[in-house]
Image 1 (cartoon, rainbow, N blue to C red):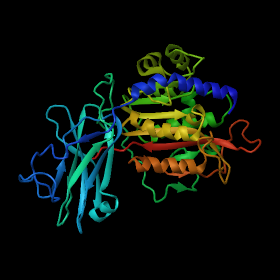
Image 2 (image 1 turned 180 degrees about the vertical axis):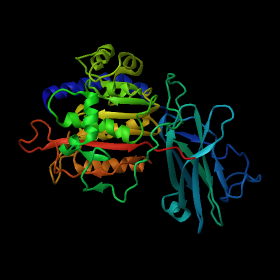
Image 3 (image 1 turned 30 degrees about the horizontal axis):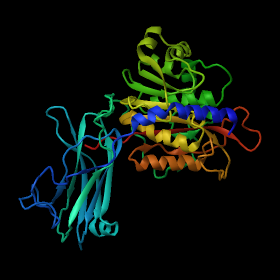
Image 4 (image 1 turned 90 degrees about the vertical axis):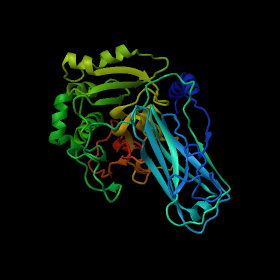
Length: 441
């Protein structure tokens, strides 16, 4: 790591100390498992009270509580659990605070009691916390069982902070755009040649820039300079958004751009509303007004449309401001280079999903190492992504309930970044497409 890069990273992290302190939330809180039905008897002998249960399979039902925004987890631990048969079902119920709202299940977990016993009686279920919504954990045990326990403890890992400053929160409302689903595929990886007409997660290739879709976007963008990975990442980003139905008038998009480009103006010309988040550059401040001015004229767009639909701000990419929420789509460029490591970029990609509405679409483009066998250097010390990094990040997103487009890693026709065909590194660019988990009905 060079001296200049060290100084920038150190200044960047120092600038964020205040943000870190402000975003610390209260610690885990223990909930009364039987608060919703006080005194009701439980399906598991030894738990609950002696009054009739609301349903024959009832185990417990916590109170509805507010949570922090983003990923939240209920943990349940059964004490001295014993059983020969039975399957426990945990359900997370969500209740919007608007008058007349009804509760709905947004996630669930099933576990056989014998397996639960092997796990020490501990089980958890995660979900996403939204603004103006409360949540409860419900447990049921249908069918025959001989389960017994001496007690149960339920913990919420990230409760709402009552002292937090009021901010715009993530809403439990799915995007109204992008009904085109990511096509289900039998495998995450494919050796098929990538195309721009039907983009998925893929490498930058010269053939894509020769397609009609590229010519259309190039006419809209009118980018300067020779064709290369920067041209590809712009037309790829725009084509993905069009292919999956996000470029409709009124859709709201969030862009993480390292420097001004023509993408925001091209999107504004299509009457989508855009917020561009430029990274903070300690020692080299650029006010949002100057950055916004730099975005004007970089692609053909009516001046009134641009003014109405584009805004810009300076924001941390390490700790994303919690008011950047409720977007229908987002895109980012070169996050691995801006954040100085593959590991930091992977964390960024995962955390930006909280900026989207349920069902929203994310498109990330990052620099990529074409080394066939990959390199053994840890991801915290590398800047360029390798194939296994893309695979690992895709699996993490899928494990969170999100959808990820198949990765086409055919590299025959790759566009090399300028100066990247010298020495040990052959560098190009990769695109990753993901759709945020939808709410359960």
